[in-house]
Every structure is written in C-alpha cells, then in structure tokens.
Image 1 (cartoon, rainbow, N blue to C red):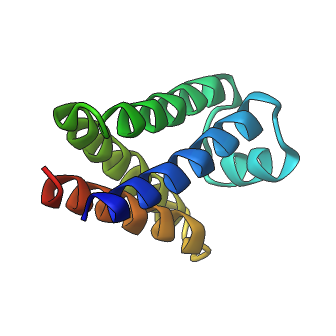
Image 2: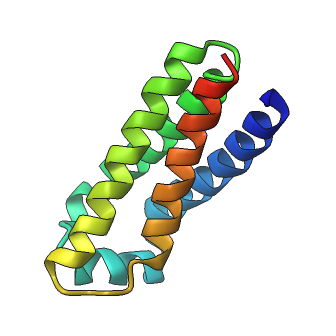
Image 3: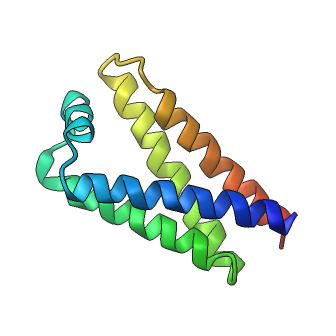
Length: 115
C-alpha cells in the first residue's frame, strides 16, 4: 500500500507545486479563472503558499504520517473551497477542481491505510 501512497502523493505534490508556480508568476489562465470566481488578485500569493505548504506537507508526511494526514485534510478543505467558489458564481466548469479534490481524498485514504 505504501508504494501506491508514494506514487499518488509524489504526483499530486508535483501538480500542486506547478499550480503554485503558475499563481506566483500570474499565469493568465489561472488569473482569468480566479477573477471569474471573484478571488481578489492581491491574495493570490496566499493560494500559492497554501498549495506549496500542502505539497510539502504530504511529501514530508511520507516520513511522518501525522503531518501527511493533516496536510491532506488541509488540501481537501482547499479544493472544497475551490469547487464551492465555482458553484457560488454558477460556473459549472469544476472538473479540474473536483478531480484535485478527489485526489486529495485519495491521498488521505492512502496515507491512513499505509500507517
């Protein structure tokens, strides 16, 4: 079970790091999406920080499981907020946020199963 946890966690962390980088360099596509859902541009670095912290947390959690569990729970909250932000403005294009939410849940389940 740990091999699956390692693979899912590592791939998810890479996606999170790339997403955070896109926010930090103000990737036009990410900025359009954030603007569409009404997220203030001045707070975008906080989203990048949350993604970076979550990615680091799940990676460190491979060695220290309690941190991995806490980070996965935080990421579940983060992506639940992302899905809710889209739904709040009646934007039904939630596929990427919903998939990442499911991956965060899978990361948590795998981390708990491989203690």
